[in-house]
Picture 1 (cartoon, helix red, strand yellow):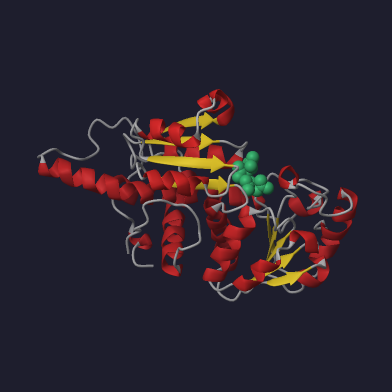
Picture 2 (spheres, protein in one colour):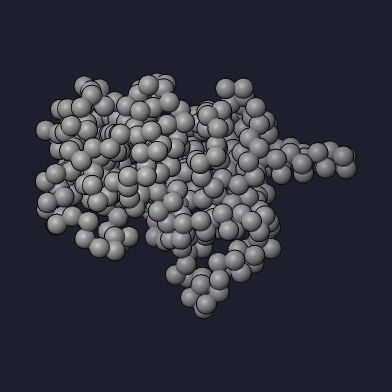
Length: 347
Ligand code: ASP
Ligand code: ASP
């Protein structure tokens, strides 16, 4: 199978096979981050631009590290230091950046749909690193990858997503990814933060934490997105924490080998108790590790077609395409040979 998407804008619209293909590709990339020299020349000579209009620690550094481990040059631009401050529109900024011929543009933006707008310019592949309350597709992939690592096949597993579903792009992308792969999804939270329209995706809704957690295989906690809340959705933080904070007690309702995920940043004591966040069932830091592999896979897959085309051209011009002159000391692997590794093919 080949990955035929030009942009990576969301989980919506991806088939089960496409999702599995990206996940399998990410799994085969994970090993590179375990090496002493964490670098392969796969994207040598390519530039990846990270354009971030919202604050981010994890996602931005994860994309940057992913690009660098593939030997691409990564440039970070944040809204606070860009010409946005001088009144430039997103489209003009993007047109100018694309004119410098990056291999891909990674965009985080507070407006839902912003990456889709850039994709329409169609000047270079666009990757959605989180758009408003809409989608955060690489986060969902790393979550699913972490669940698969611990629980095996996603099909038939029950996953609870708890908290501020209404404002969460992480929840939307995960609902789409998990249901596409055959999981049962339960949404748990106060009624004001549980949009009824999500029921059409075949998910259950619960307003009682303990009832919702009964027998689940995995629990995904969400941060209260207070920067997006335009009115009071619950009486007070204290009240919210009393009803929805994941404590050791509440955890007893779940399956004995349950795993706990959180996309970060965490509000300890609000949605998750420290004893749970740092406890034996937590896989929160593994999610961060897997995030790099997922982003390597997405960068690789989106820039491959262009790369293969260039490769064909250089071959046609009698030039060698290869490793000579490389200053990168990497162990040999499938990635060093400009091929999709066998594990990622046909799965
Ligand atoms: N905004 C969060 C952070 O600062 C996570 C993310 O970037 O997705 O890490
Ligand atoms: N880091 C995730 C995001 O950027 C979740 C969060 O910020 O709470 O959407």
